[in-house]
Length: 256
Ligand SMILES: [Zn+2]
Image (tube, rainbow, N blue to C red; front, side, top):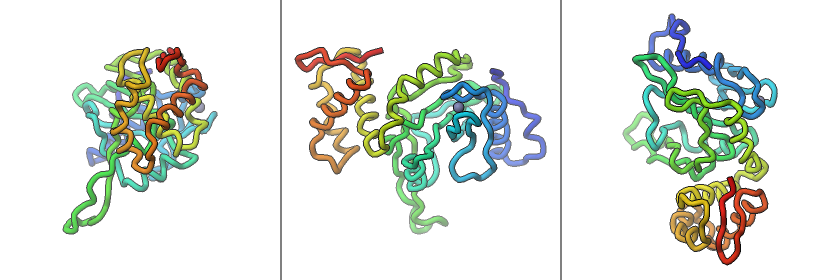
């Protein structure tokens, strides 16, 4: 995998955003691989396709590319809220690629995969609608809250200018593939519980520690009024999937 961006593809383009789009898309076409099946080439979709930027010609998984010069912060500004929600809850929901590059060196510094199973409504923040005086009054955008994605859902392909092992990327993705078999409306809860387990920062934890997230989980799922029961239900599912094990007397262990 080559980390330098080829600027010759930007010839003829004037606007900065167009140049950035062309050179980053070209980089992905020439360097990225499918993290699901390992296929060495991703195919660029036709311009302005409403949903996907790239797809794998073998397993057909779609990918949406977001790129930025410099690093991403905790929030990534994205497009229209309702469009995003219908896209991530559809049966053709894409994985996201986040690409960061340095303008002075024209090199890719980070290339991060967020698999589709981790892109749930909990990580999409609705922004305030544009004011009545704005040209697009009432338009409501969204932010992607990267910090709400469990660490298992942040898979680096390039990290701090170092290319990660392809085998590691593929096996890390396989570990949470069980989530793709769950309906998107149920998956949100499971992924939220995985993030809470992450926050505990300890492979062994007690059920009572997860109950401490009750208020936060209630605000993410306002229509559910039995949060503690829901937490226990998600833990049973994660046990059945081999993600955690029950050690008895309210103790759990995260399996690695
Ligand atoms: Zn594939």
